Image 1 (tube, helix red, strand yellow):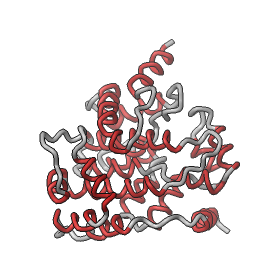
Image 2: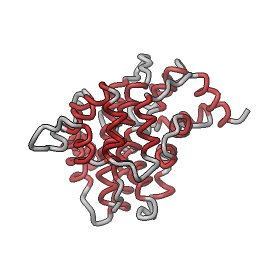
Image 3: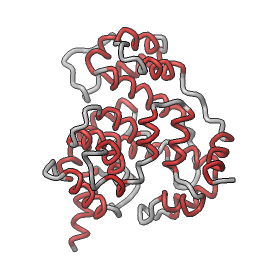
Image 4: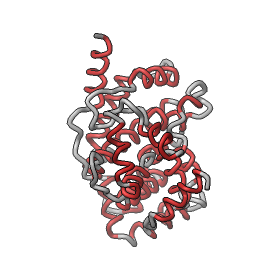
Length: 301
């Protein structure tokens, strides 16, 4: 039995819940570029919960419209089909992930980390000239979606991995590879394809640990660079940024004369503060800007 097969067997045995019909229909509609706001509004309006989430999202301070938007079709017209489709997609995934409630694993912290990574990847993607940066937002936000499932299915084995990462001293992916022969990025790709998510999403999720393969030519693979860079952000639970030097070097190489790390992190912190209420997430106790400053000062000592 190969490692890939064993991973597929593990995920098959996990009985992953199905995506909601509304999310599936939106993905189907996205296959035809002729479909517009009227078509996309139909499955959203058929799902009262999703309708409420979409309208709350569009009316958040994140977009800053001067009047309240109370119509789904208008909401889609104003912020774009891709933005709404991706919001519905990761909102659906957000609701499906199990909470293992074991050891040091904390689902809320994972979603805080994921939102930061999504916002960061989109910001970097825009600076790298990528037109469809909203896809990076969703892919980066979903890059670690396999972790809660693995924590639930593998129990003590995975809990030991989380404990052994020592607040970022060791990457959990290195521990996964050493223990199982595969990583949560591989698992995320399998899950994404099992849900028939767009192949581009699956590839971004699957390659988010492979920064060194793309950072030397960021213009050739701006999406993969942005998502992989986001994977090096510190976790909200960590007191210092252990991978800062690697992150800084890769960021400078990718961004060239673009905004500094401090400027980008400040923007991500601002976007997080505006976006978090939509997902009912609290603000982390320490911002990315604060942990960057602290870790930079410690490195200089």
